[in-house]
Amino acid sequence: MRTYFFLFAILLFFIGCKSDEKSNTKSTLKVENQVPSGYILSNQKEIGPLEIEQMRKAASEVLAYRKKESGNKSYTVMDLDIWKFGGLVSDIRTLFGDSLNGSWMDFKENLTYDYGQYDQKSGSGHYFYDFEKATLILLDDNPAIKPQEFEVKMNNDMLVIIGMLSYKDNNMQAKLDRVKEFPVKPQPSVPAN
Image 1 (cartoon, rainbow, N blue to C red):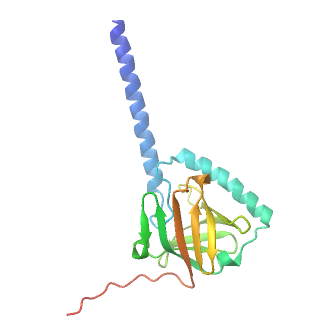
Image 2: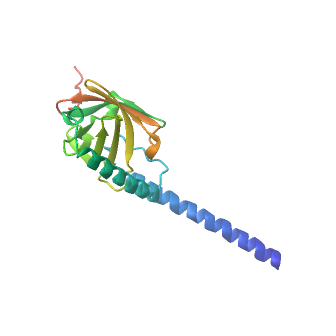
Image 3: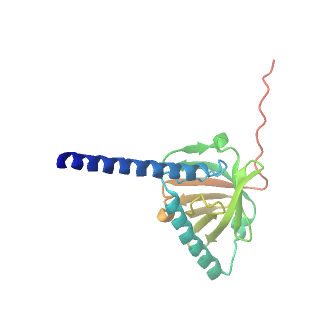
């Protein structure tokens, strides 16, 4: 009888562990589904909602501190024009040209930013660019999107951002080009007869 009871207890233990795994997977998928498709820098595979919440809280404090220390200083080199994505490389995808779907970011003088594709805005957030340390921190307004921090390399009208470990973005980098206007969606070509 004790043997059956022991086997039954082990069976319940494994069933309990398996149901926890499923519920965690569903919550992670739920968060990934809340990220807008227009957010080209999305990089939160296998990061659960609790971890995102903790990251956002920490990033919010860091952002507030850095803004306060700088006197909410913005740099014209960042907020002058629109930045169009020219390439994105991560451990799970490589995108160039048309595959970027006209993705862009627009940094504002008030330390906010917008992003989207072609002339459509997909989202917004708050940022801080530290000129001396050459770092950029992004905190999206969407609570389902984790914060991000990048090392910045700038050369005239080109910007390269390299993900840092702080918010698990060290697996990605992107190249952006300064443009005066939003990217224009290409018109489908009509075959000649």
